[in-house]
Image (cartoon, rainbow, N blue to C red; front, side, top):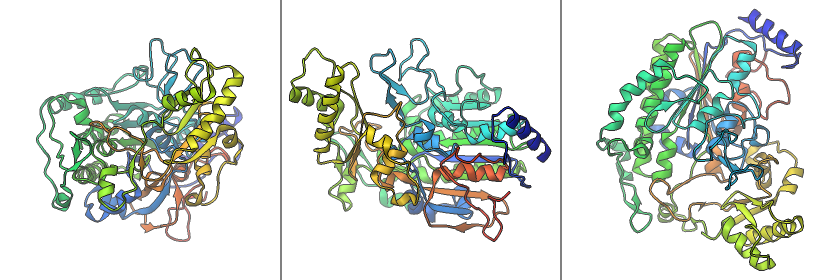
Length: 548
């Protein structure tokens, strides 16, 4: 295997596709399979809260190499930027994945919104009815890097969300599968495998049938307490009973993770992942945690049931790989953390928690600015975007008016009591890319790590802590994430491999450190300057897993 890697590196170096020296870490003992597990909306706080109750897969990982204080550097703690960082080692400022969606005023669509995992050039598409694609990811994933030097390597991604699978696998993944309207499917340019069709066939009866309420673990019962969210909506008593064929209810239940893992296992069998000479990569993103967090908040009985089920499902995956006799290395982390519903937080010690002012959005702020500046009513709306994050000055306005609108918007947005910081895009572009201890980064540093000028807004707004950017909760959307604060930025990073001595390192590390760490295990060197992270030494003794 070493000679194949060396030959592949030499050929690629001669073509100028990778750095000529050093191209590879000449390291023996690379695992046959790298398994990257991403639990959507799994904060470090949640890991600590439930750690004592894990008995399955999460218990196994808790006894491996544990970094309980992993950090996402970016302020935009959303699914697409988070997944885009994990297997590339790149902040959004480098990867280009600044948010789940952004404004591009150059495109012909009326609303100018681009979804992070779409091909907006596809005829007849929009950001809600789109063709799935990883075209916006500007950097290679780990699986793509490994295959650049080991052409026989396979790179597979499976998730409950299209954007998660595509950001983990990258543009050239061998297989990409995600949940969509009652089944697992793939992108239009790929052919779905027979193994996945068989899973869908077995899944269909369960999806179509009503589901009974799930049993409540004894250690979850103290969380069964109804919390009113609106006049008709409440949380804290849900046990995941659902009507048959209800896609949203199925996604918002532990069943989604169980079937996602089933697809991953069948692809391991069908593609012989980890069973041939090259090192393969299996990316598994489990989305139910996020859907449950959005629908019910993260501190109720619903999340407790979900955590117990997640632990069991992961245990089943690892048992499956063990039974296959595969030499595999696992990393588990999250794309972001999450924030509970403010109504429950208010009851439990922080009356300052609240929902965003409904007038803090581009339409209302823009209307106020138009009145303030006396703009001609025939002109287009002054601002696009919001309500928290990126605001864009409408390029349809005369240049002189654009400058006035931007100045007025910065002043008006900064006056809202719930706003922690407002940044001018020009200032962010000039701000140095942050380095040093990630837990000490300023708000401007965090915003800079998320900033990519061709896609980011003219104005970037960060809300104060404990402000939920959902003004009017509805079923399925009562709580969220996306802030620059630690409850959204800080996530666990857990490594495990058979025979690897466990240890715990509580000092802060970064999620972008994962890709270079796994690359070193696989014996593949990433040229200096191509990623934002560093290799984490997983050897508890004087040796180093980062050394050639």
